[in-house]
Amino acid sequence: SPLQMKEKQMSPRKEYMTFREALDFMNRWHGSRLGLSRMQEMAERMGHPENKLRYVHVAGTNGKGSTCAMLESVLRAAGYKTGMFTSPYLETILESIKINGQNISEEDFCRAVGEVRTAVCGSRQGLSEMEDKPTEFEILTMAAFAAFAHASCDIVVMEVGMGGRLDSTNIIPPPEVCAIVNLSLEHTQFLG
Image (cartoon, rainbow, N blue to C red; front, top):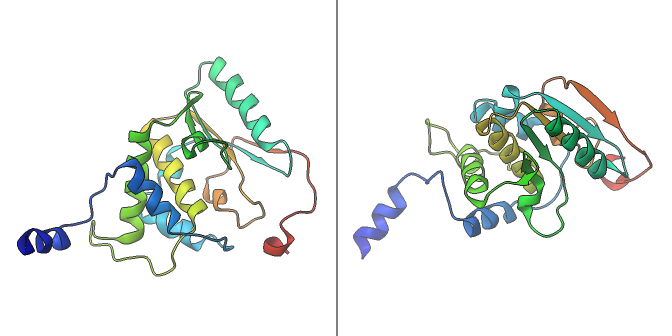
């Protein structure tokens, strides 16, 4: 009915969503753009979940994912509650965010992406919509920070994305350990 449509338009954006809605929201933000300002703004709007965590930060060209997996398994075996963020994924986006060696659940993924959507699109705590729209990778990175903070991870093994000093993972506080694996000249069209 017209009244239901009007109420739906006026109601605040819900924080939690279905898995399909979460994927559709993320797929709206294509491309790669250098800079940390969008990440810093999202983090501010979300209460800085990245600052509630400790990190092992892994950068390089080849071997980041394997190195992350090995480090995460060692830390988990030592009794730490671990988070791990890697990209790209092979079969499902849920592989990008792992807690204690397991893919994040659809429910927890939707919760985290919903929090990012609220930060990006506003409507909660008087926030207006962000003018400088984030990229899909930036949204995924912020969702990972939110998920790891909600799970109270002791340590997060964080894979650097495309790299460089302006990589979206570089808003984390100083890590406990930095690892640099094999390096080569790549992504010059973006990084110079």
